[in-house]
Length: 291
Image 1 (cartoon, rainbow, N blue to C red):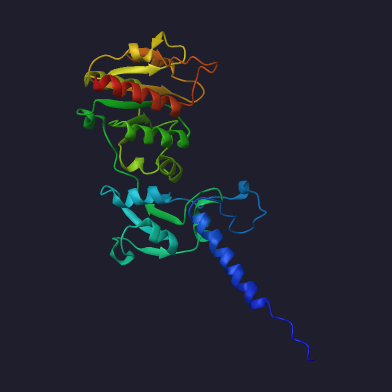
Image 2 (image 1 turned 180 degrees about the vertical axis):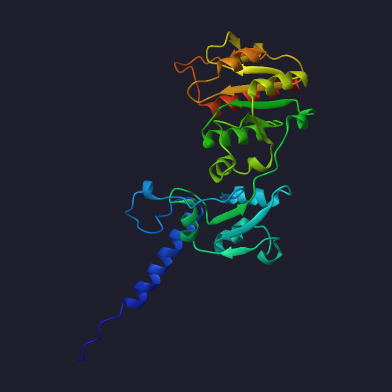
């Protein structure tokens, strides 16, 4: 009896390897698993150096963030870099109909710009910063959020999402010791950066005085505030003021706001992350304004 020749498994192995690779790439684009380093998987992430940005150059990433930026008529978008799968999920119409160039790339090519930690979901948009906003544009808004040197862009992005959810008219912050518009900020905001004015001012005490002139009652949140937040609401326009993640409100801010208030918490922990405190405070203010 003739012996059956051994089966050549190389073609089958290659087929399954390609399927596994495609599955991993799809999961990376969805943000379910991180993308490995684009040069050397064993290289430490701290060794990655971001490419220099030109003046007025911003890179946004993530499906929600980029979709919202493309839909925003105030955005000046330059170029979209996207994987084929992510382009279909982005759902912004045919690429040849978009008013800017579209480059079909691999996830690793986007990693080269954003680094190994960015969950970009296979999409990156080169754009320009949004137009500068002024306090004078807030006359018709009944609820504002003011940040006193909140430095973490993840916190500011999460605060923006809450501000949009509760119908806040703007997020106001200082130019110094506050995050500028960036991919990290926009990704944390998950599209909210396009939906609410992000106003950066030079002097916070002067800005609070301007808000008083516009009819706003300014309330500073402080864990040692003299009374609960609910008892400090007054008037028909409210501006909530939250401080730095570690130090809280600065002394000048404390002296300038109309009132200092605390969030009463019955548990053993008496302070919250600033983004959580913002969400609770906005809910309370919105309930007061509805009444």
